[in-house]
Length: 235
Ligand SMILES: O=C(O)CCC(=O)C(=O)O
Image 1 (spheres, helix red, strand yellow):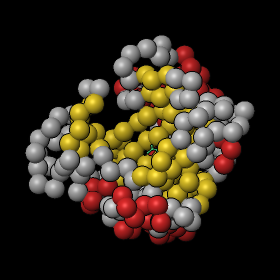
Image 2 (tube, protein in one colour):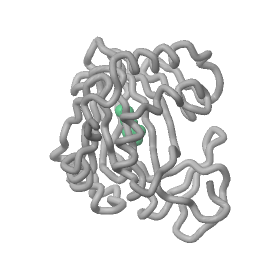
Image 3 (tube, helix red, strand yellow):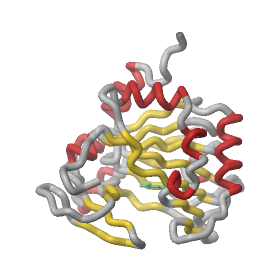
């Protein structure tokens, strides 16, 4: 039986560094099918945001449910089983296209907020935001620590077309105060990922991305998986 792509060494690296790259998670045919599905979608409604610098689809599998069976490959299931032996669920799915020459840059940050169906005040949850019909809340750090982001790259991605920059190990410090971010970000790592590759990332890892100086797009499917159950009233 072939070994999982998430080898013990990769899981160890992911745990200490806060990120790890699986270069061949999806085949070229699987990537072509995902792109065809996204490109065939009507792309209209509040979850679709298109400008010269970014095309984003929020609630991706809600908007395009046909993507779910294409994403749910044996490779993905094996990797998730290794990362979450007790099981997990998909909590967020977004598509981002940073087109060729895009001026969209993302400043250094940690992903501190989760989307929930509705507000329900619970100890350790807050602050809350509500934007464009979506309610988000900062959960306790234990929930973020048991969440994994998988960035599935649909194009070859390097420093010229918006590869993520990260601060290795920064996820082990909990929530980093805003005034400490700049000094930590002085020694980043650049995360080049080939098309079909997956970048695993902890939400608490400090990350950023630069403008594109390339003629190539950078299309990514961002999936978040959590092994946590939220307290009563939150979903
Ligand atoms: O895709 C990017 O360039 C940045 C995305 C990001 O920072 C995020 O999803 O939190």
